[in-house]
Length: 96
Image (cartoon, rainbow, N blue to C red; front, side, top):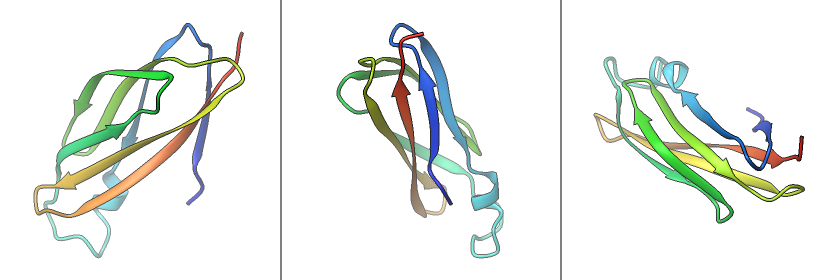
């Protein structure tokens, strides 16, 4: 799976997140697993607020960043059964 890439203006505050449905419904996962917790890694320069955790979705609002910089944001989730995985995406900050 390739890493997702987004662009944002330094002054924008936007929601970003993951849909974990395909991973939770994969053959290797026990039936009925849902997201129990999520830990976001937001690099210095960006600000993450308003974290939301659903049974299959995780979201965070991200603001800030320096124009011309690219940041990698990660989310590590733990399921109700104790399974753990992590995904990340890149945000390039572009003055618009």
